[in-house]
Image (cartoon, rainbow, N blue to C red; front, side):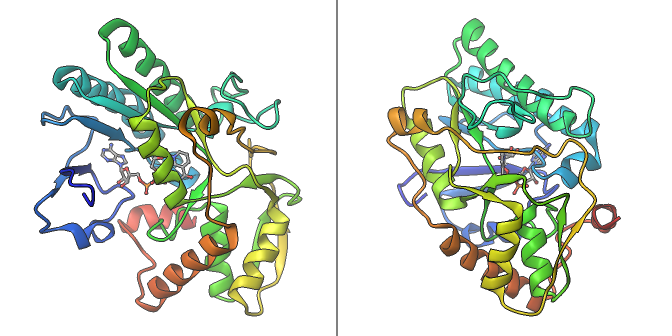
Length: 305
Ligand SMILES: NC(=O)c1ccc[n+]([C@@H]2O[C@H](COP(=O)([O-])OP(=O)(O)OC[C@H]3O[C@@H](n4cnc5c(N)ncnc54)[C@H](O)[C@@H]3O)[C@@H](O)[C@H]2O)c1
């Protein structure tokens, strides 16, 4: 919108909140539609960023069938819309298409190591089909597609109860509770700050490159190191403790971003500590305002249990 574009946001508010975009409501270039993309959408657009999907394990496991529908039927609807109006469409895929990878770091040429019937399958396989659909529409219907394989991303306005490591550790540290590590803590993750991802998505959309592109931060941390870092940045008395490992928890994750560097001249710029401090202050404010439950009580209860 800052560049003069008109933006229409379609969201069913499953994990999103109106308050995340409320500062734009009333702007002449902004429109918000309450819409579930499992149903067809008839609008006129030039570009589609297809980002709709529950993104964290508790959210996508809450209703696995719906997760699959959003990523398959929903993706067909977005590709169908792109075909109808001649728009370019960018699909938000994920590092989860690599599953628990046997290749490290993961280049886009790696086909992945995914359990098709495990607890994460609704999301991993849903996103893999979303990619397959994109290239089928490109080949058969000439739809102009871009595929971003997004690695762990965090930042202000993320869901407080999203159940992933960044939000879990920050919340535990702010509430002075024990910081809990699933398993031995030697598993690694790489974390990207949201503004770096947004820049990468915009570059990919405007590029001529139509193969999948990893967008993530290649700096790798063990979960244990990360717990210590968050404890230090938040301050306070929290202890760090190991608990039972999660089923199918990937052991190592790190993007090979050679493609993004070569074809998009993109790489992440925001240092981890800078991003974490911004996120911690957002979480602190939300806690002070009592905004710990971001949506339906049923979903929150399910996440806690
Ligand atoms: N954050 C990450 O680390 C990460 C990593 C890899 C991929 N991704 C992908 O990026 C995209 C955005 O993720 P995010 O982290 O911003 O998550 P998010 O939960 O903040 O955003 C997803 C949005 O999709 C909406 N949504 C879900 N199902 C829908 C449906 N059927 N119809 C309409 N709207 C629907 C939600 O309400 C929410 O606003 C997702 O597709 C996710 O799978 C995110």
